[in-house]
Image: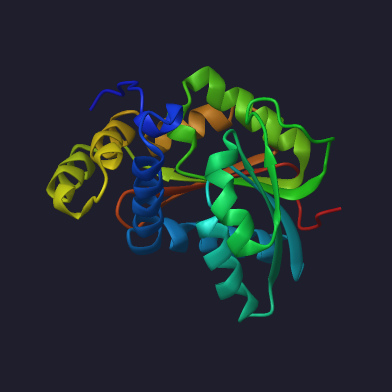
Length: 232
């Protein structure tokens, strides 16, 4: 199945405020029930294990309302692990609800030119973002994320596969928003395979790259900044 770049409506806020809010709510349900949250949780658990730390700071890029990191943080706290996260999104309208609900820092900024100094966070993460980028942009984003982090870049995204696309079309009645019905199949068509993502991450300055498949055609990728088990 060939990768096809397709403009997604939510990327350009191509809808009314109510339609955008409905689409963001659809994304929250997709992440909660269709593999998104467990994948992010496993990625963070890997970072905690690798660093032997009980507390890590995380910049969540293209965070939207911050629903995924909020839920994952709550689950990890039950194991005595704490994530201090900052949300970043290109649109203030996407961040507004997340700031109210999470009482956390939020920044409007460009993922390809992160407005932070070197090594500002332990981790930089994203969920359902990288498939929006062209291959050169993926390399550019990972380079920026590695600059800003001290430990690793965590990528939670879709896997392109014909069966995945068929499942998306089968699930159309579950999507409440017009934007989601357009964007969901577009996301699968322009997502990357595991091998493609590995090849792109290996073009970065990462000392080590890990990629794993997860439930319902999700991938979890880690670009470690340094080898070893210390975040310092």
